[in-house]
Length: 137
Length: 137
Image (tube, rainbow over all chains, first blue to last red; front, side, top):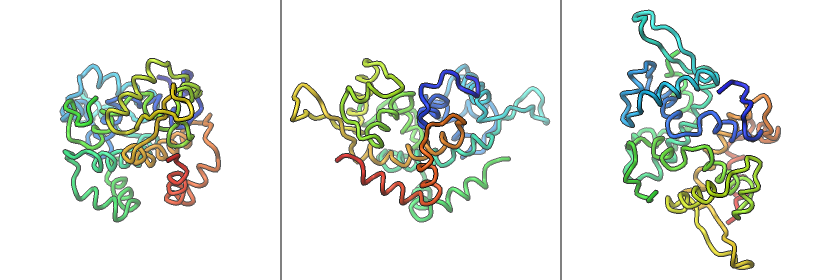
């Protein structure tokens, strides 16, 4: 999917985002990158939702071509790639935090940490700042 | 998709949400309901992204069965249904606002109103309150 999105459905800013990550998997990869410090193919593959490797490869390629992540060689192991979120990708942190708060509030069986919910309610912008600082550069 | 989600992929609160609305269309229907005052099948069908009627019918049924919207008879025209967001659906307003702000910030061709971007930057929580008050009850 090219960065300039010739196939965008409309000029609505919500639709713009959904054209890029409106599926069940892409935002979970961004969650792993932005909230869990993951950066390697095998790490994403190991997440509890058990993404299939062909879907993961497809979504990583789309994220890269739309400028949300970069792919670089791992200098300690050149057979391996390291994925990092760009500024455009990192800017999705507030979306992920709102999704997480919504899920934590509405799923009776949620595994969301109580500290997250508490921190969100107490000081949302402080929480966002802290999470942003923790993202692997 | 039943409300108790027997097929949920994990207990992650982000995954919980994506199990319900992780596709290209569902959040656009919620946008129409929450931000554009739409409530009728034909109104959703008329949005600029041109959702197909079979997809719209499917997504409305899923939204209803997962408790995000309700469907009622239109008293002024009984052949027609009126869709409204529940509390659970309305609670997605911050997610939509963050998606809209992200899209407005990163799509060079965005159609997002400048007033929205300005209001978000100036007073996000005031904007959210105002948008919430404007939602059709």
